[in-house]
Structure formats: C-alpha cells, structure tokens
Image 1 (cartoon, one colour):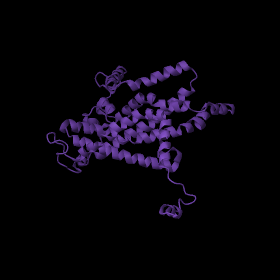
Image 2 (cartoon, one colour):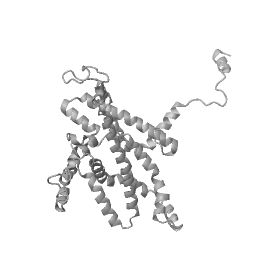
Image 3 (cartoon, helix red, strand yellow):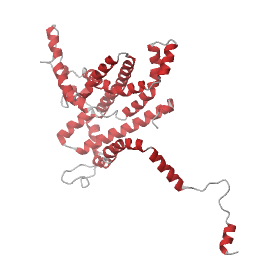
Image 4 (cartoon, one colour):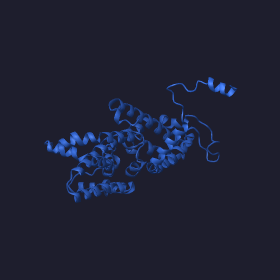
Length: 331
C-alpha cells in the first residue's frame, strides 16, 4: 500500500450526521431568489436611489455642525468648534419654547390628521353613489395641490385687519374687528385648521386603499347577522385599519421635531415678533438666523439635533408598540 492509499485509509472523512458546506448551492439559491423577484427589486430601485442620494450621500455634511464655516477656507479648513453651534438655542433661552411649539403642532397634526383621514376614508367607503364618491374625492384632494403661497394669500385676504373678509363682515353687523395678526392666541387654531383642510383629503388615500382591501364577505356576514353601519365600522373596519394607523404613526413620529416651514412662513411670516410665543418653530427661527448671519454651520447643527431627536422618538414609540402589539411594530 502506497502513501496515498494509506492516507486515504486513515482519513476518517466527514462525521456521521454532519453536512458539508455548499457555498455554491447557497449562491445559486440566492441568485435564483433575486431572479424570481426581479420585478419587485426593479420597483424598489427608485426608492433605494432616492434614499441613497438624498439621505446617505449627504451624511458627511454633518461635519458642518461642528465647525465655524468660512467661505474662503472651505469646509475642511474651517476651524473646528465642537459644540458651539448647538449653544445658540440654549444661550438665547429659546430652545424649550421652539421645541415645545414644534412638537405640539406636529402632535396635533398627526393625531387630528389621522383621525380625520380615517373618518374620510370610512365615509367614502360607505357611499353608495359612485358619481358622488368621485366628486367628493376630487373636491377633497384639490386643496393638497394648492401651494402654501396661495394659501397664505387667501388667509391674509380673510384675516387682514383693514381689508379682510372677516373684519368686513364684523363691521357690517356692528361688531368690533379682530386684530388677528397681533393676537398670538388665535394662531394655533388657524394653523391647525389650515393644515387639516389642505392635507386630510390627500392623506386619506392610504386608509381608503386599506378599507378597499377588506374582505367583502366579512362585511356581508356582519350585515346578515344584523350589524348596523356603526357596528360594522367599530368592530370590523377600525380593527382592520389599526396596523395601517400604527405604521403611519411611527413614520410620522420621526419628523415630530421638523416643522412645516412652508405653512408657517406663508401664513404667519418669520418676522412677526408679536406672534413668536405660539407660532415660532425651529425652522422659522433658523431661517431668521441664517438670513441675518448666513451661518450654515448653525443650520446643520439644528438639522442634526432634529434628526437625532426623531431617531430616538421612533425607537421609543416602536418599543412601546412592540410591548403592546408585537405584530404591528416596525422592527
């Protein structure tokens, strides 16, 4: 017996019951999975490209938050100032007011907005006239496509002290005119109502699509058992919409510290100091600061502050949802 035969005879070989790794088989299986789902992957490419270009590639720009940007020196030769750019809100004492206003408005937008969107979706689903349903959808979607500039112009023509429609009507009936643009207590109501008027119709599309995906046999069985419309909505439609509501809520919470600058700027403006107490949010404050000092490092610091805050809010909300309803959490 030669050496090779002896080595072969002494080789115990693979242990019984163990499988040898098959990397080629795994690669082929992964490749087959990709090919089988190529249509879905192609559909995801625009979203992947969007987040790659607008969310991940700009991340090195966060370095601006820790430097005092100098136009002549450039980004990497500007002096590194550590946390100085984050002190502008704390030192002026405006941090808590701006944060509270921004969060309070966004919470109102999220809660009232989702409640109205669900109501509109259910209302449209209960309509039996197809013609009336289409007309209603078109009329409710229309405000979403009106620009904030035009919305601000419409609001000014209604609320202006001297020439507004509201004060004109009050003067006509003998009442005192209202100084809307100098009364900060009126604006939370005005801003929330304006936002809901513009966004409710368009935001109801997702909920309406979810309602349309409900199995009609379940609804028909409930009708046969004697359930009226309110009972069907309470015990069938609303539980069906619960996962959609939770997912949209978690997505919305990520931007709870990001104000709707277009809405606030065109409705109120950024320089009306008499309304700062209830209408000034982080975006309008940063806009005033940048227009005065042209400090892009400060704007980057605020953006980082908002992103980190939103990140922890999403994690906390998802943890809470996972404790209560694990099937509806994002991860």
